[in-house]
Length: 119
Image 1 (tube, rainbow, N blue to C red):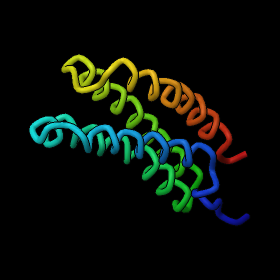
Image 2 (image 1 turned 90 degrees about the vertical axis):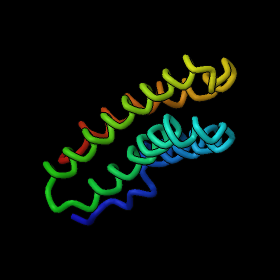
Image 3 (image 1 turned 135 degrees about the horizontal axis):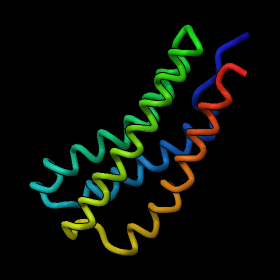
């Protein structure tokens, strides 16, 4: 059985969309916000897709699943940082309304992908 091309996975593509959206938001923040909460937020958002990709490259199903679980944790970390950014008036209601559906879609897609590994 050949390895998946992670770039073709819809869950990976959605994670890229989230990470790119986060980058665009944080890029416009004041320097202190960028270097503190922004850095953490971008790193956690980027980590979602990076762990999906790393998992695909692993030799075992168990290792792949492990990395997808890490990706799921990074998604929840991203949500944490977004909540903090909103509370600190770094995100508008409109920006949250754009991101929320993407994040709400990504969690079940990660779970479905996790459940599909090894079948």
